[in-house]
Structures are given as structure tokens and as C-alpha cells.
Length: 236
Image (cartoon, rainbow, N blue to C red; front, side):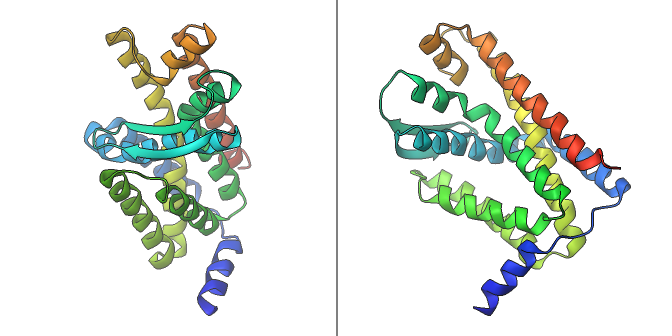
């Protein structure tokens, strides 16, 4: 009980914001992770986790039956849901993947703007724990478990400043990483005709060209970046 009370107190106690210099250096560090290929190849697994989690959450809210999630070592993933193969539920489920990291980043920015960096980290842990029970392959279990272990380690053992830096790093990485995945999606579509990507599946369901759906993904993600920047830096 004392441990739970300690966790609750940590989560609900607002902390002072990072100094502007440290905050901007942290954002630059997140951008470097996204732009530097060796770092991106490893960190992209976290974006895939969020992407597939987005499919899963929206599928459930749309009344579909979630059959499980698989995450692969090449950073691809697959979310299986059962229900009508057409209609609004399927459209929204397919639409959810690429914007998911942007929306999560925006929510994280809102929490950080109010000083709840530890609360953000524990919220991410709770989401990872819920996701873990839906994973259906060994690499996916390993990927989610390692991610959760890193977040837990920082949230439990880190200092207040470490909490703030890590929480902002995660937030900025989600926002920037979401943009890069959509740009990579279009590059992949340009190389391969008849792709089975989310955008192309949406195109087949709605008869709206896949490039339009990529544009929708990017527009939503850019809006999330702009709103997050206003939350985090607009007050200064």
C-alpha cells in the first residue's frame, strides 16, 4: 500500500519545467534520433508499438473484436481485428495507425505543460501493460517488455530532472517519428504498386486515392506538432 501511495504521489505532483536551454537541447536530441539512421532503426520500434496500439484501440471502440497484435524485427507490425470488412469501423481502424503517435505526443505535451512528467511516464507504462496482453509473437513481447522496462527504470530510479528530460524526449520523439513514418510510407508506396499499406487499403475501401490519405496523415501529424509546440513553448 505504501508503494502504491508513493507512486500516486509521484504521478500527481507537478514538477517545475525544464530550463529553456535544456528543453530545446532535448527536442534537438529527439530530432537527431529520428534523423540519424542507426538510431532511427532501433527507436522506430517504439513508433510501431504506438501505431499498432492505435489500430487496436480504435478497432475496439468501433465495435470490432481485437484478435491480437504482432510486432516484427523489421519494424513492421500487424493488428488483427474481426468484424465487417467494409464500413466506417474498418475505415477508422485503418485510419488510426499513422496519426496515433502524433496524438499520443500531443497528449504527452499537454501533461508536460502542466508539470506531470512522472504521471506521463506511468501512464505510458499502464498503456504498455494493456498492450502486452494483446501481443501474439515473441519479438513483439520482447519489444514491448524492453520498452516498458526502460520507462519504468527512468520513472522509478531517475531524478526529477531526468524525469523531465526523458518525458520531453519521448514526447518530441513521438511527434517527429510520426512525421517520418508517413514520409517513409509515401516513399514505399512510390516504389511498390499495389501496396497493402494502410493508405492503399483505405483507398480501396473509400475510392479516395492513397496519396490523399498520406496527406491526411501528415496534416494531422503537423497539427499535433504545432499544438504541442504551443503547449510546451508558447507560454514562454
